[in-house]
Length: 447
Image (cartoon, rainbow, N blue to C red; front, top):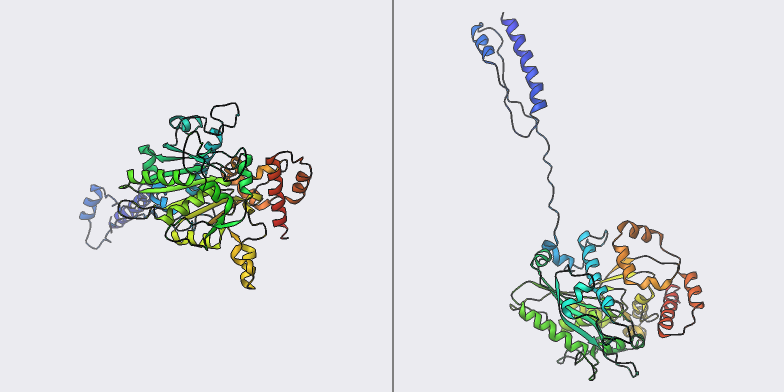
């Protein structure tokens, strides 16, 4: 009788172990229940009968922990370049990619809103009023409010050299957007070169001291004279504004900082082509004058998003920007000739050679500022597209295509030669486009 009870008990326990493992495979210990009749049978048997051991049966599964997805509000300082975009470039971080695209679209609004119709009353100005511009250019959802339009005058002696709309200042005002960004963002957006006078100004490729700080001339800090002229020249006959581009910007940004002085603020400057040069000059200017300070004296971060931007200054300019903490992210197409100008010959590569052999030109070379994000695309039908901002943003929106083009590259040499030889060079745009493309070819051949 004891033997049969023991066999029954073992069989029951084995069955219940299997059932417990199948039904209660959790991280919590689960005890196996024993029927009351089995307990009574055990008590009625002889003390010599083998005892039945009832143990807790536990099945532990690995605990899978998922890290929370990083939000822009939590890491906006890194996205804005606090650590020079370390570990965010290769591969390109999704949040950084989204911000590059977003600020690029804020720049495209300048092109969409610029009035190029000579018959219009707003010729060479913005088509829309400040309250309507974002909505009219498809950015009504951006969460920003335009606070000021910016005008610039190429400082050259030409009949058409007058003040024209170059961009705008806006600030994040939508509470939901401010929460998503993690701070109050002030954005200054600049368009690129469009008019013939601006193209001529771009060719003024001599270096000249910036002299932004009235207490320290810093003669070693030099910038391209055409960009400096556009930034500092004024047109007293201007219809919509007075004063130079520089004074308009410094005044408006200081005003906004004073309004939001008790909040976390960021200053973001974005521009395409010539506009990226103005953005870089403005970033340096603000930092050099110490205007990027809040109510408690904390330094407000300045970030420049440069799209297809040329070189702006010399080594002294680059080093001073770095010393002041101005962060510049240069988004460039490796086949874009504008990004290799000015300084087709006198650039950072030749400077390194000059320093090595103590050559006189080493201090007169142009040098790029900041961190480079290199894209690689080339439209064979029209090489001018390599400089198009929409093409830049279109590629950034397609990561798979971006990776494929980066690995494949493009044959730019033969196509550029054919394209340039077919041009009639009958207007300023084609002349400048051909010159830029030829400059890129010379640079690529290391002549």
